[in-house]
Amino acid sequence: MRGRLNLFQAAMLRWRELAPYNAVHVAELAGPLAGPRLAAAVAAHLAALGVTGFALDLRHRRYEYAGGLQPVEVPVLAGGADAFAVIEREMERHLNLPFPPDGAYVPFRFFAVDAGATFHLGVAYDHFIAGGDSIVALLKGIASRYEDTGAAACTAPELYPPAYARLFLRNAGKAYLGQYSLPGMLRRSARAFRPRYPHGDDFTNAFTSFELPAPLNAAVIRAAGAWGLTRNDLLIALLLKALAPEVPDRLQAKRRREIAIASVINIRGEFGTSPDTAFGQFLSSFLVSHPVPAEVGVEALARDVHEQTRRVKRRKLYLQTLHLLAWGGLAWRHMTPGQRRQMYAKNYPVWAGVSMLSVASLWRDAPGQAHVLHYLRAISTGPFSPMVIAPASVGDSLHIGVSYRTAAFRREDIDRIVAAFVATARSLA
Image (cartoon, rainbow, N blue to C red; front, side, top):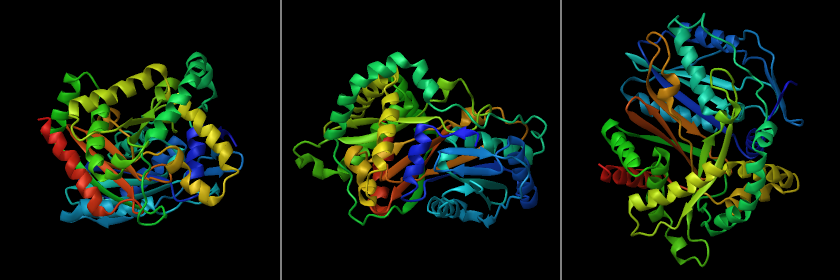
């Protein structure tokens, strides 16, 4: 087989041994839905990209796209006035629906929701095959082809990008010096309060979403700019503030008194590729933690978060996460199923993962009427985290998908967290 999986992809395959590890994207597109034309556009664009005839060799951590035209089904669901409720239910269903574990199979599942004047095109995919930016490019191309404006302009991307060995070689100095940061990373993990799973130990995912409308999103952006930090830093701070009341037990803990969040980072730039020129996944992550005392203000908390993220990015400490994933893969082979289920909660105790994606910038050059009106993402939690927050920026708004393990949270818990997040964001205005 032609392609070799990178370290993050290999980790995702280990996670999906325990439960489905999928992601789902849904883009709202202008105009009425023509179902057969949409299915034809999906099939033609997948073939043009070459992402058909997929096969996985799990044992040797290799994959291949044989190419060719293959039929694609795009089931159409009636949306109407209740379109977003239908979409959330369908996204939740696909999060929990496994793909085949190995061999030849189709790693995509498409669906559409008819909302009358507009429609929503959704794709669920086996998450290890691609990062979110590649899927945005995929849906953008389908939308362009559906409008019959982009068929001739499609260029097949690189389907077998290099794994992370070259990345480590190019950053050998930082990778070497970063080894001295490993004890600090482990100490930070040791200070983080472990997530609780009071409702069982299964990996079922539930899903909901909310939105920061244009005025509120603008207030977040203004505050981040005024404080000299990124919007992602501020979103992490807002999430820490929202989570703090839900974790009161940490205040009585002797050692583990901090709340930790994993920030998922796209490192595609390290490879010099764009989502249109290379299809795949280029991810790493790093941990941000804070004790979040009740009296801390949003600005002070956000500045503390920024200091952590700035240090990680400047010294490329996210490379050390990849090293830890490699060591985890070696240890995984010798663990019992029970130990594998508890590995991350014990050794990488994060309460949420945050994966930011600027859909607006990725979709900007879509031709004709193939523009996106709304975009929603859902990412499986797996054993990695009890919750994953997936913001997607479209236009002036921020659409945020929230997937969570039902073993850790009930819907009323998530509603409180979302309400606190939005209320704190409003205070910035």
